[in-house]
Image (cartoon, rainbow, N blue to C red; front, side, top):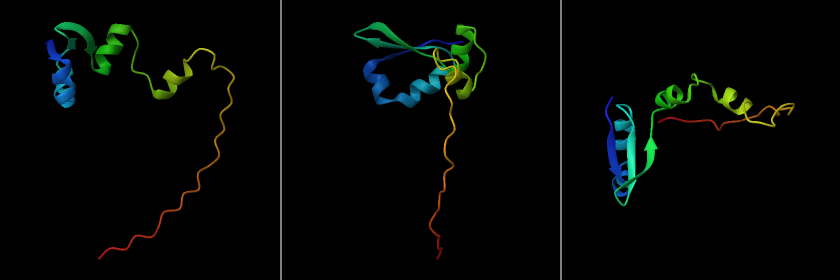
Length: 86
């Protein structure tokens, strides 16, 4: 597992490079030469936090105080325009 460091300026200029580097290990983002942030892949985060991969539904369902909230959205009636090719 590698560690990478990006200055804030480098990170802002090339977020994609930082995301690619995060696949290999944590990426530290510095402000004025001092580590200020850490970028991790979601797998690394789950491993560090002791949580397994959870769905968005699971994550939202774990929000404190959300018990008993009813959610019954109305169906969407989407009509797309006819597409003509050529």
